[in-house]
Length: 297
Ligand code: GDP
Ligand code: MG
Image (cartoon, rainbow, N blue to C red):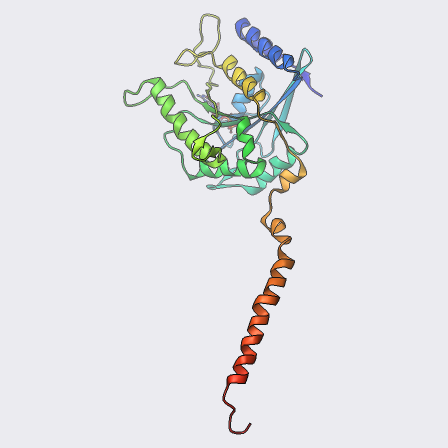
C-alpha cells in the first residue's frame, strides 16, 4: 500500500505548486499512477536522486558500498495519484555486469509496468567506457530496446565548475553527447542511420550544498530549478506516444537463442539425412565400386 506523500511538503512552495501541477497534468491524461525504474552503475547517485525527487530519505545512500543488493520500490500517494520509484543496486561487479544482480532486478519487476526509466550517471566524469556500454546493453537485452523510448538520461553532481575554460553549457553538451552516444548505440534506436527518438538528458544536484534561488529552490549553475525540471521531463516521457513496458515472464526469459533455434532442429536433421548422409553414402558406394579389387578378392 502506498503511503501519503508527505515529503512533498519539504519542498519550497514554488516547487510544491509545480509538482502538483504536473501530477494534475498526468491525471488529466487519465493516469493515476506512475512507475519509475532507476538504473545505473553503483555510486552514481541513484538512491540520492530517488530521495531528492520524493523529498524523503527513503533509499539508503552511502559513499562507500552504497548499494543494497536488491531493488526497493517506494510508493507515495497524493490526492489519488500514486508515484512508485524503484531504486536498484548497481549491476556492475569487478568490471562486468553481474548477471545475478540483473536477474534479481528482473524478477523484482515481474508483472510491473515501467512508465519511465531513469538511466543515471555522473555529469562530472570525463569518459565513457566499455562498462557503460555493457550496462546499456544489459538493460536493452533485459527489457527490449523499446524501454529507451521511456528513457531519461540523468546526470548527477551537476553543480560543477568545468575545466579548461569550457563554459558550463558546453561542458554539459559534451558530456551529454558522450553518454547519449553510448546509450543510442546500445539502445539501437537508429533506423536507417537516422535517429528516430531523442532521449532527454536532465541534470541533478543531490548535494545539500546545492545553490538555491530566492524561493529556496535548488538551482544548477545554469539557473535550472532542477527538481520541477526532472519531474516535468518524467511527465513528458511517461505520456509520450510510446507504450509503457510491461514486464512479463516472456520478457524476463528473453529471446533465448536455444529456444528460438529449437524449431529448426527437425528441419536441420532432415536436411542432414537427405543431403549430407545420403550424399556421403553415395560417394562411399561409388568409391567402393570404383576401387580396384585387390588380388585376394
Ligand atoms: P547509488 O549507489 O547510485 O545509489 O549512489 P548514492 O545515491 O548512494 O550516492 C553515492 C554517493 O554520492 C553518496 O555519498 C552521495 O552523497 C553522493 N552523491 C549522490 N548524488 C550526488 C550529487 O548529485 N552531488 C554530490 N555532490 N554528491 C552526490
Ligand atoms: Mg543506491
